[in-house]
Length: 180
Ligand code: GRF
Image 1 (cartoon, rainbow, N blue to C red):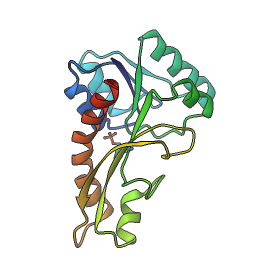
Image 2 (spheres, rainbow, N blue to C red):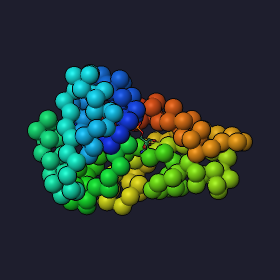
Image 3 (cartoon, rainbow, N blue to C red):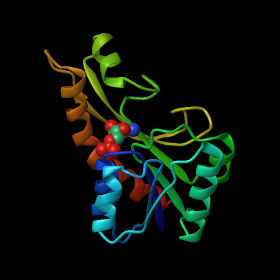
Image 4 (tube, rainbow, N blue to C red):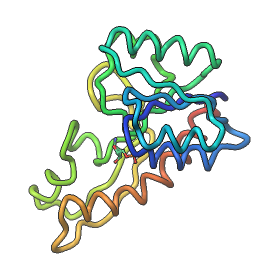
């Protein structure tokens, strides 16, 4: 299957998806709403087609959609893409778009997930790969990975621990998903 990835910044999850590509899927396009996303430069170095469109949502989504179709993309993986997608875009890719979210959904949809988990006194945090639906962070959860919250954790130290398990979870779940 042909996978297109949408990022906004660092792109460490995108890198883990690219490194794990093989028989199950290939990454054929990395696109960003930010032209200076660090992940785009890395993708260029790997020889992957890249695309950025910093414009307003309607134009940006139309450009993403056209670029993905042009590359024959079967499945879109959101990886640190920090823009909320319109219902129109989501419906065009319904059942063919995944996201990774840094919480144990349905807990902590939206932003600041790690600070909220620490604040709540949770013993565990983690990440979830889910199908993207119009409602934010609410689609079917396909897989989760858990880490402990340790005494003295800050949002940053917890984010680092969660990110390490994101990097193994996302490629595994994407590979399973494209075989469905
Ligand atoms: C990750 O924690 C991801 O779960 C969240 O945003 C972060 C993106 O990091 N959606 P990166 O760009 O993949 O390094």
